[in-house]
Structures are given as structure tokens and as C-alpha cells.
Amino acid sequence: MASGLAAVSFDCDTGPREIVREGIDGVLVRPNGDVPALCKALADVMGNDAARQRMAQAATDVRDRFSATRVLQQWQELFDDVRGPGR
Image 1 (tube, rainbow, N blue to C red):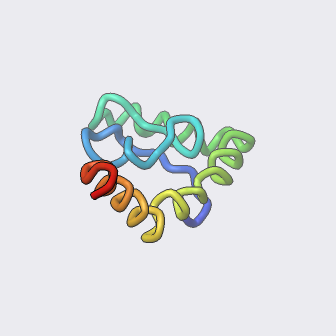
Image 2: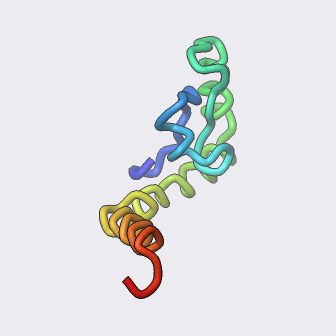
């Protein structure tokens, strides 16, 4: 995704659904492990130039959403919320 490619992934309990935004920058295949559904999703993305290019362009946003700076900022905000005002 950071390289500008649309993601096609199984919708696992952890991982991909936290990163891939369905229909925006990739496709999540359900149920997890359904290989024919994965093949169909891959064929659909590869066969639709406009959708693939749109998702690929949006996929580069993953660099910003998961950069070290952004993740550390989110952790700091969480700690600040837990700590509460004036502490």
C-alpha cells in the first residue's frame, strides 16, 4: 500500500481490517480463508482499471496513517486521556 498498490486481503480477525479501508484503498475478502473469493477479488481489482487506480492512489495514505510520528502521537494522546487533566 505504501508503494501505491491497492491491497486485496482476507478479512482476518487482526491486522488487515485495521489497515485496509474497504473499497477506499483495498478489498477485504470474507470469509477468511475462502480462496475462491480471494481469487475473484483479485480478478475484480485487476480487471477494473479505474477502481484499481483510485484505490492505489488512496493506498499511499497508509504511510501517513501508520508513520512512527503519527503512531507515537496517538499513544501520547491515549496516555494524556488516561492520565486526565492537570496531572
